[in-house]
Image 1 (cartoon, rainbow, N blue to C red):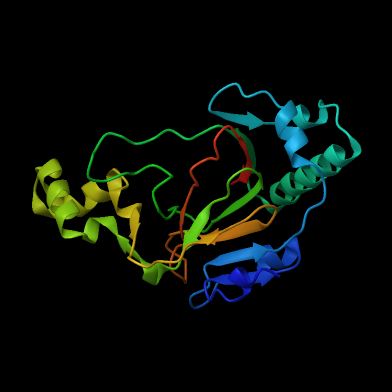
Image 2 (cartoon, rainbow, N blue to C red; image 1 turned 60 degrees about the vertical axis):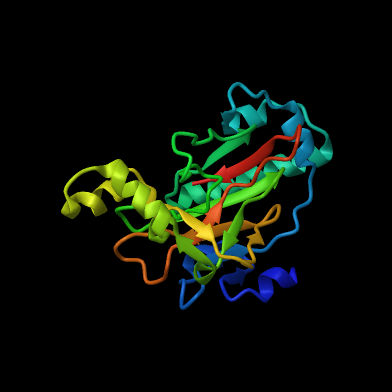
Length: 232
């Protein structure tokens, strides 16, 4: 067991998919981890997939069409099983071969792309699931180690200038453009890297949620290396 996970009050550790989907978040725990050591050669799968765009969705049919070694086939079976488990649960999993995400360069004082610490929001009760099979993995951050960017005085001041409208519409403006979803790590913050092979369930901001949403970010990709990521 990774001590970084077991010692982290933000993370709950489970050992089956059933536990992953049925264990409630509570207190500070807003990230649930199905902790796994996966066999198989995921690098082989990445090397044989075709990147069509910076983010290419890979179907089950794409995976099944690959000619793979025994270890590559083991990795493929793991991915197909994960996709099936999530689909049967009612989620809509997507397997992505990823070169990089689009960067948000519109404003120099605030970033709203996925490389920025952020939370997910949904109008209905749902969670975010993700697993990195290959490449750089995402980070999460305890909520008390992050500050909402719109609460930082100099950023809020520039957002008010950008809004240039009635004060009573400012909060709606922040939500409309997703500014309120983004966070900045506090000095001495200690992010946790989610690692490879573990299937994670992260709390989302929605009306029925009993815990704070999980603050997370996409990693900067390793030079010359694609990521293979399951997300929904």
